[in-house]
Amino acid sequence: MRNVKGFKKLIVWQRAYELVLDVYQIAKTFPKEEKFGLSSQTQRAAISVPANIAEGYERNHRKEYLQFLYISKGSLGEVETYLLLARDLDYISENNYQKIEEKRKETARLLNGLIKSLKS
Image (cartoon, rainbow, N blue to C red; front, top):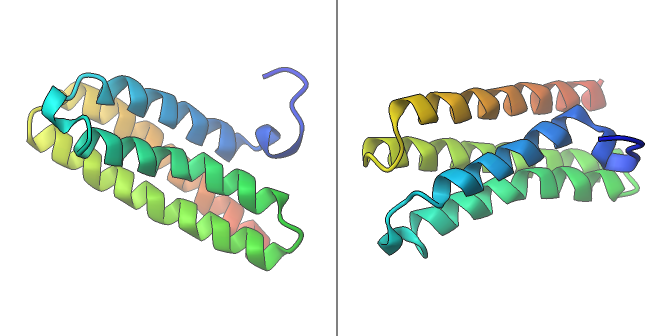
């Protein structure tokens, strides 16, 4: 990302955005009957992560920013649950699950770091 400004410069936002792209690719492989179920829910939870990081960043107060970061953190928990379910239903392979789970964990680690730095 060249010449990035604002929330787009945040590594956590960049990783969360990459996670969304991966989730959308994986959700395409879910069975058609899941289009309005697990596929949609997983995508909505994933997009909530960078969207809330961005919205919080654009707010005027640290307290509001933290509130949106906590919402992002909750959405990451939803993503984790939906991906586990997709794996256990054999909608995604163990290998694909492990790859996306690593990205989700990295995003969570970065998000926790940002929250910690804003609280101190």
